[in-house]
Length: 269
Image (cartoon, rainbow, N blue to C red):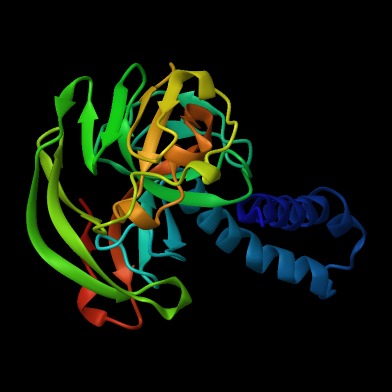
């Protein structure tokens, strides 16, 4: 569901009714006549919709985390805020950038429109920017020939798909010098070959048929994304690169989790 489009239509309809009343309909009403209910509702809702539309389009947008692909950083049920202007100002609905500000950096948690279905919003971590050579082999990430520093810190247990109990190894991973949590499951391959699609730019990648290791060169204007829960994430390994035009914004804050109030107010990194 394109909520931005729905808001825009609601804004246009309520604003249009209000404007029509001011410019035309009001002239034909008696001075003491009560406003039609439709006009009254339009005048009441238009300012509210305008504020919500403006905030959501240009400042911050709320999202709910639906899957465990970003564990342990983000949990199912986290409600997060996404900064809409960090990477530039875009026109609502069509998502066309009109003002360039900052480029996504390695390590950013980014919300974007899923390339295979732009009606869906995905959230992953940027691991490769335009021109980067990203390699992932034996659960080790390398960017431009430089291994990304990792250090095991703990373990993390959770109930996975099929009600399987999963215990993963948690690492402190440092992209661009900034640390974040990442986890892997012992015994799992680097990727599952049957799940790799014939995505645009597939020729920029080389995969081992046995699921151990791959290397991709990120095209200009695109980004390579991976989930922090490396072995339970549907990400760029499988469906390719994220175009700049699909970017929604940078996730930065957890504002609610009804299952764990202690997560409220967490700043994301």
